[in-house]
Length: 60
Image: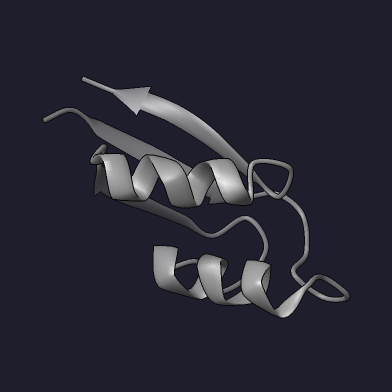
């Protein structure tokens, strides 16, 4: 599996509770915080749900 880096670029404040929980499940804690995870279908689905709050980079 390939890895991706997910960076939170917008705040989770004043968002729906489901989006806040998705950010937490991805391991994002605060603005400009990044995590590197495997690009599984489950992770990609979570990223799609909060795509307007995060930036995704493909890693080699």
